[in-house]
Amino acid sequence: MLKNIGERLLTLIPVLLAVSLITFILGSMSSGDTARTLAEKKYDRPTYEQIEEIKTEMGFDRPVLVQYADWLKDAVRGNLGFSYSNDKPVVNEIVKYFPKTLQLALLALLFLILISFTLGILSAVFSGSWIDKITRIYCFWSVSMPEFWLGLILLYIFGARLGLISVLGGSSMKFPIIPALTMSTCSGGIYVRLVRTNMEEVLNKGYIRAARARGVSEYNIITKHALKNAMLPVINKLGIGFGSLLAGSAIIESIFSWNGLGKLALESVKLKDYPVVQGYVLFMAVLMVLINLAVDIVCGIIDPRLKNG
Amino acid sequence: MDEDDEHMMQIKIQAIKKLNVWFRSSNGIINRIFTQKAPVFGLVIVALIIFIAIAASVIAPNDPLKVNMSMRLEGPSSLYWLGTDNLGRCIASRLIWGARMSLIYSLCVLGLMMVISIPIGLLSGYAGGRVDTFIMRVTDIFLSLPTFLMALAIAGTLGPSAKNMIIAMASVWWSSYARIIRGMAMQMKQQDFILAAKAAACTHSQIIFRHILRNIASPIIIMATLEIGSIILAIASFSFIGLGAQPPTPEWGIMLSDSKEFIQTQPQLMIYPGIAIIITVMAFNLLGEGLKNAIQD
Image 1 (cartoon, chains in turn blue, brown):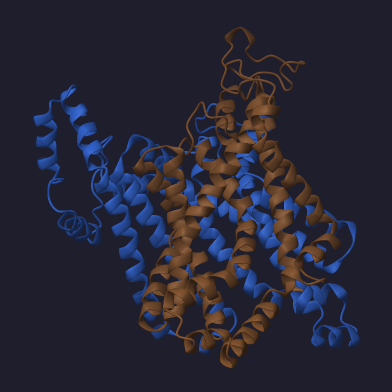
Image 2 (image 1 turned 60 degrees about the vertical axis):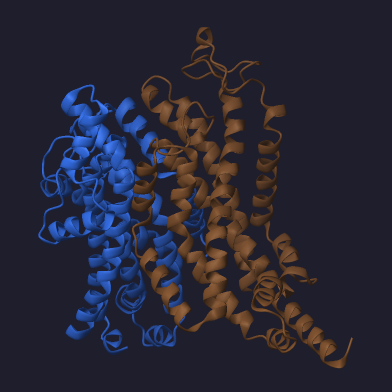
C-alpha cells in the first residue's frame, strides 16, 4: 500500500513539471507586455529605455530555461513570486482566497451527492416509472446547458426578483448556496446516470435475488446490499468531480461575485498578472493530482480487492 | 493482376467490410439511427441549425452589427422579431448569425484538434515501441492537466481573440483523441491486409495514409460529432468571460455577457441566447447519443 502511494507520488513529478513549464513558457512569451505594464505603472509614460531597464531588472532578458530554473527553485521553497498588480506574494494571495473556493466546492459536492444518489437510486429502483423519465430528461438537459446561463437565470430569480442575494456583488451571502446549486445542477447529470447504471447492474445480481428470497425487506436490500456495492465507482468519479468543481468555479464565482480563487484568476488573466495565473494553475494542478491520489487510497480502503490488484 | 495481389485485395475488402459494417450495410448505422426517435429529432434540428448558419445572411431580418441608438431595448415587432438589445441591434439577427459563428468556431476547434491528434495518434499506433511509449507519456501528462484552466491560461496569455481561443482549446484537448486514434491504428495494424500491403512493398506512408487512415476515417468523424455539443458550450463560456470572440461579433456567449448588465431590467436579453445554446447543444448531443448507441449494439 505505502509502496503504491510512493510510486504514484513519483509519477506526479513529470506532470507537475510539465504544468509548470507550460505556464512558465506562456508567461515568458508575453514578457514584453508585462515589462511594458510594469513600466507604465512606475513611470506613467515609459520610454523604450525604461522598459528595457525593467526587463533587465526583472530578469526577462535571460534565457527562458535559466528563468524557469530560478522560478522552479523558488517555487519548491514555496515562493511563487509577487503579483504584478499589488506586489503581494502570490502564495499569500492563494492562501487568502482559497478558503472561499473550497467552501463553494464543498457545498457543491454536498448538493451533487444529494442529487446524484437520490435521483440515481430512485430511477434505478422504479425503472421505467415517471421518476425515471424525469431523471432521464434532467440528465440530458444538465449536460446541454451552459453553467453560466443557469447562473444568470438563478441570479435573476434570486437576486433581481426575490432580492435574496445581491446582484451587483459584495459578499451578502454567508453561504454560497445558489452558486453551489448552479454548479451541482449542471454537473449532476453524469453522476445520476452513473449511480443509476451501477444500481441497476447490482440489483440484477444473484445475491440480491437471494436476499429477496430470504425475505429481506426491500428497503434493506437497497440500502444495505445494493447501495454499498454500487457506490465504489461513484465515489471514485465524485472524487475526480470534486477536483473539477474546485478548478472549474471561476466563471460561477465571477457571476455571483464570490471572492474566491477562480475569480481572482480570471481577473489576473485580464490584467496580465502572470505570477498569479501561474501560481493558480500550478496550485490547482497539484490539488487535482493529490485529490485523485486520495480517491484511489480511499477506494482501496473501502474495497480491499483493489489494494492488491 | 497476379495471384498474390488478388489475394491481398480479397483480404482487405473483407476486413473493411467487417469494420465498416455498421456504416454501410442494411442494418448499418444510418438505418439504426432512423429506428430511434430522439436521434432523428436531433438530426433534424442539427440540419436546421446548419441551414440557418449557412443562410444567415439571407434569413436574418437585419444587419446584426447595425447600431440604432433610437431603437434601444425595443420589444418584438415585425422588423425586429425578438426586439433590440442595449445598442439597438436586432436580437433575432444576432442569434441567427450566432449560429453561424458557433458552428464555424467549433469546426475550427475540431479541425485543429484533428490536425494535431491524427498524425500523432497514427504515428504512435503504427510505430509502436519506444515512440509509442514516449507519445503516450506525453498524452498522459496532457490528460492530467486541468484542461479548462490551461485553456484559460493560454487564451489569456495569447490575448483575447477567437483565433487564440481556438488554439488554446485545441492545444489542451487533443490528447484524448490522439489516444483513441492510436487505439484504432493499432487494431488496424494487426489486420491481415496491412501485412499483405507490407508484403506488396508498400511504403510506411502509403500504409499509414492509404490503408489505415482511410479505414478509420468514419469512426473518427463519428467521434467528432459526439464532441461538438461540448465544444459549443466551451466556446460560449470563453466568449462569456471575454477570452473568446470579441464584441461586436454576434456570438451567443458575448450576447449573454452583454446581457448581464441588464439583468434587473431586461431579463429577456439573457433568455434568448441561452435557449439558442441549449437547443443547439441538445440537438448535437441527441445525435451523438444515437450514433453511440448504434455503434455499441
